[in-house]
Image 1: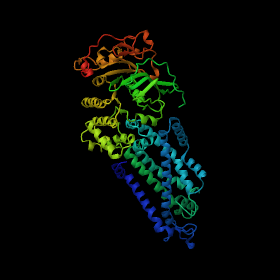
Image 2: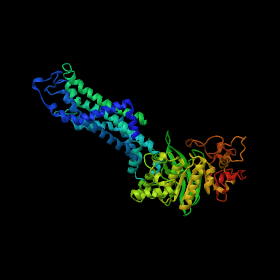
Image 3: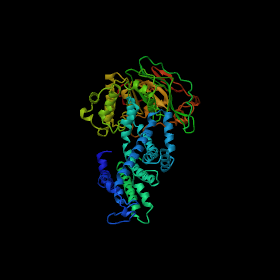
Length: 630
């Protein structure tokens, strides 16, 4: 939490009162044993079990000891034991919460299932169970309360880690080769700190009450030591003779517990707390013929498939048999509607597919590395400096809790073992390369201080921290206005010219692809339906490619006529039609389209998966599509 958030929480009347009470309790915990420690142990044989008097406002116990002094002195022990139990709870919960992100898929699921099972039991029942296991006494009670609260805290950590781990800046850190423990410490935990702080504050209040309860039952603090719970148990025996002997420690427990809980609730109002069955791998159908990949291929994928477990059993294939080759220095555009499998193909190539995905291929080589079958550490080591990703949402491309320069420098520090200053100097240089103004100052700013275009430039700079052989730009201009779009596209061109890297540009806008790329790959429903040079877009053969081109408006478009659209919608990956997936939306479909077509040559360097490829040239203003390249 930032300083302003703490101030806002304390300006809240409830938060201010809670904070004041905690400060008062902290002062008592420090000074009470020093000032009244001896007096609390002094016995008075003439005043055994006495009621309220001027000398003893709350009376005395069975040995004549002053109850008021004992309640004040017990503050240190009561708060200290409760905070120690909270620390154990938070520590164990953090470990259990992040383990699924560190361990493999099966071990992670086992940890998650164990936590879910423990959460199903009432916390007090778990505390009593652990108290019996660890034995009677303060040490056993601390361990019992700490471990009993750990499952609920672990569930909170798991939920928040899962929410953050899908963000683009985490994927970017993985591409950069950041190790798992560093990824957790630098990118995951700092971004879930607020709800954890709030929950830990509330847990402290609960631990105080639970500890008092165990001591009251005789399972906690043992004589001659004492805390509020033990004093409450002793006073309850004489509640009809001297009610203050029981009420005083009870009131102390309630006030301290409320102070912790109310402070947590006040912080929550400010920060806004947000508070499978095992399957066999999918059977692979016979591989389709793929274009041969040359020895200069930076990316060679043959029959790439990405499968996810289906709700009713079996598997769903959003990417189903994609073959793609990208050579050194080449720029290839991958286009298609949302849901066509473009981004998932890129994530599978960069080994960033979700954990539930099952990725297979007859052949997959990225920058000379075959990543399938290797461990995550091996892939990070081999591909960390060879592949760069530029994600589509500039707002989520960076870790919001780290400065831009530190995030860029992390690539160099991880892979080249450079020190902090040399790595930061390179980050500043790369920001200068992508034309970020005042790079020295900008490197020390946070992502929210950058505009959308600046963040996208910084993402490109992150890819240039090493010398990438392949840059994957996943819809890098989606959230930007047209002026900034053009600047980012020109920047990618310049970067490619300087580094000689191959570029894969993913977009749903064929006009954007036409401005930058030399070759276009059109995807539909998880398949490649056409592959052709940008200069041949006017001779597109597949009806889907032609429909995408027709939907691009230009200055000559008749404003009186409705914009061209493609009727229907893409099929659900779990319910694709047999044969050609585009047939339900195609005006040329007939009975033969019930059989799936394979990619076949329809022209020079042009292939299409269609039973009825079109040969008539399109009447398009190609400059609007290709930026003058056609």
